[in-house]
Length: 332
Image (cartoon, rainbow, N blue to C red; front, side):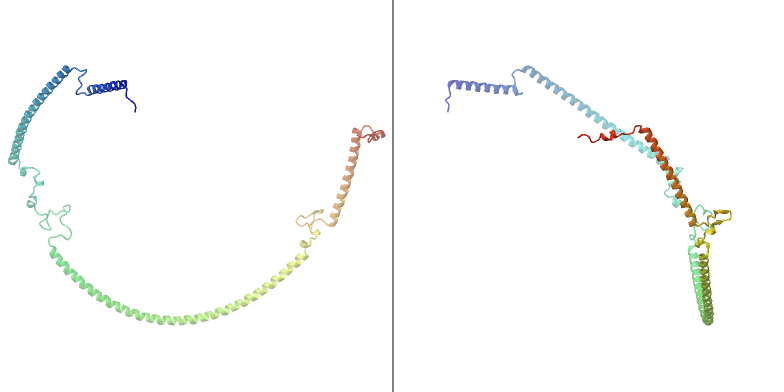
């Protein structure tokens, strides 16, 4: 623990004093309500007094305006009441005038809106022959006549008569139908007997026709077999004759005489010519060999002449014995 010296205490006291003074100064300066240092209190008091006077003047002016507004409201209420009474009096006078001089009965179009028009008006028609019942009026239609009940009773009686008549007609039709059915049954029996008889006749006729057809078919088959046999035999004979003619003919035998032309022995018919004969071929080969030999002789003769001419032009000096002895005389 260190021991405080007098100088340290003085320094500490001085520092604490300055800090306390600074805090007091800050309180005096930064507090707007209590700050009086550096300010003019007289001016502030004058400003406060002027502000109070201004507020009092403004308040008096507002009170004056309010009194005027209340007075104006009273006057407005009085005028509105007077206007309401005048309007009411005017409406009453108008209603009295309308009830006295402008009654609904006096209007020109009153008949269009008369509530008692139906009571005052005549009915749509007073009878079926009313002259007002025109076509365009559409007041009378079929079944809407005034004597509907009498007409309905007459129609019922007429329907009853029609029903009785229909019953009588139905009974008569049934009787006629029974007679027709009996007649149809008798006619049907007669038709059945006739059909049976015709069927028997048809069966007998069919049997006879079948027998005739069988006999005819048998004859036709026999004739067909004989005809085919004859045709086959004739075809075989024709084939044998054709084969014999082909074998003996000039076409397959390739007879060279058939190509001989009538224009001379050196000409032939092209569509019949079968080629040259062996003698002609040998003669042609002999001529070809002779031509080849002559060609070879000409070629050999030409080669000899050409070689001789070349040697005469190129080889101008003849080699001697000394030319051949110069070879193979050294090691290199």
